[in-house]
Image (cartoon, rainbow, N blue to C red; front, side):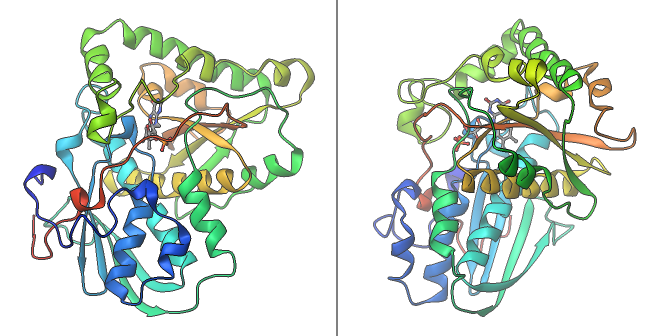
Length: 346
Ligand SMILES: Cc1cc2nc3c(=O)[nH]c(=O)nc-3n(C[C@H](O)[C@H](O)[C@H](O)COP(=O)(O)O)c2cc1C
């Protein structure tokens, strides 16, 4: 198992340290491919992760980027199997994919490329470099400015065109994003999420794990959720049923879920990658999402998903998308903290 704290760095911390300081224009200052790849890793680090644990490490060798799971950043109480951890790593791989595509890289991406090294989540082999895409600055800014709807949603109706754009999102090889279409079954799911959180919160181990990642000190560690600088609305507010949808049919939020055919590490990584696509698509429309994985695993929840899934499918992620109340960005670890030595083999 790889732990994050005994690793070296491939480049000095002075180059660019805080991923939050990155701007698309910085990319134009670079000429070598390794430098460009390292900068795009800065965007990958801006991916969401459960409790902002950022459970990933990177290795750049020539024209290859590897994303490696850092299981020392696991959440053993709510995520004993590391499912959320691998979904988070998949989200990171999805964001890196988008950053590479935006900036004109042609590449081959493989998930879990080495059966003898299961922590190696994704390998990106660059095969060519073209001009950046026409909208590359917007694309990078959508990654940079995306944030979770941590402070809750505002009750602004979702324009139909915006909702349809999200609802009609693509599926990816056995991974599917589905949105609830009727208010009644949507309300039932939302009420169950709130109930699951209440029940879990009565467990001191659950509360302790939450508290260890959500506290004021996190501003210093550059991970987790620093409560002094980041507004957090109570779970029941973020996941409460949409009253306007129930009464008038006008939506202020959309509730969606990512389903997979299997329930193994590769499925979790792919679910994370599709989550990244959906979140960036939402970010481009000015929307934010609340995300949960552990609350849907609560006993009895499975029945709630029948309205949008087949009995054979596995739900991996629940998202709620809407216009969010403004809240500050969460911190990220410096780039040099997440880089492995090129020769590191696990
Ligand atoms: C797999 C996964 C699970 C998450 N679960 C929750 C959750 O249960 N509750 C919550 O408030 N946020 C959850 N989040 C959102 C994270 O807390 C958030 O991504 C992280 O704090 C970083 O903040 P940002 O998304 O604003 O960059 C989850 C995110 C991911 C990727």
